[in-house]
Length: 102
Image (tube, helix red, strand yellow):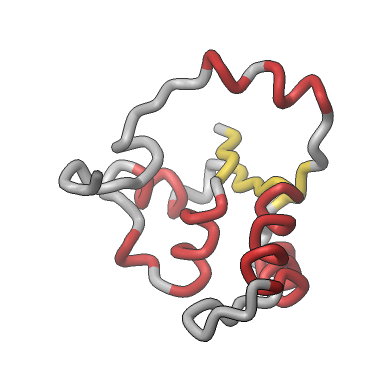
């Protein structure tokens, strides 16, 4: 299965896997699944880093290199990708968000 991980899950996978939800964790760990990340996530990380918050010190280039060396595939963003967003499931469990989070 192809799994496109959002920015939060990418950061958790790289830095604190305990934060990944119990449904998403085994899917990410399953070597039969292909893990993918969007350049939009790198863009988001670069923006967050540029805000110079002390609590966010992730460098987009370092994250990208680590993901690629760990076997993740990078996906470009095209307009046709954005058009399908309104039909994606919004399951908190799939996204790795604990059910107690707001």
